[in-house]
Image 1 (cartoon, one colour):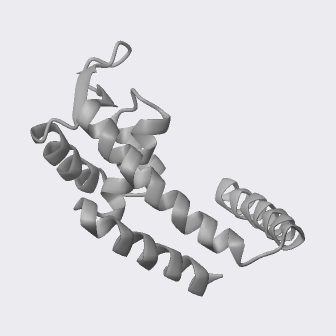
Image 2: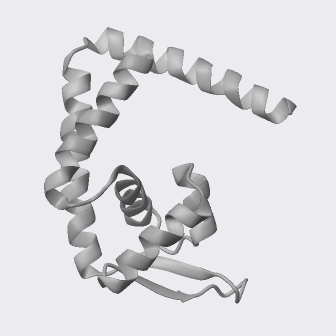
Length: 135
């Protein structure tokens, strides 16, 4: 499992190089593509990254015009973040590369094997969530 995860991560990182984005930048783009209006704190949680790391990426994205921010209506200290047209274009390119990596992984398995992997990963996720909630 760890070997496959590492291979997936390294392969995606290599595929993203021509776009000039890191894995963290990719994660941020994918999260804002799927859920516009997230705050930096929400992005940090979703990307499993320190706020400082997300903050550095957001500064770069804001300066490059890839992300726009508006004051959060419920918390005036926070900003809601969304992709601009250029950010959306980059996110769509990255999404294609991610999909290619995921499809390559899936092609190595039969439908039955994929169903079994899903079942096992769901069970593992449930167990890990239980462990976390018990803390």
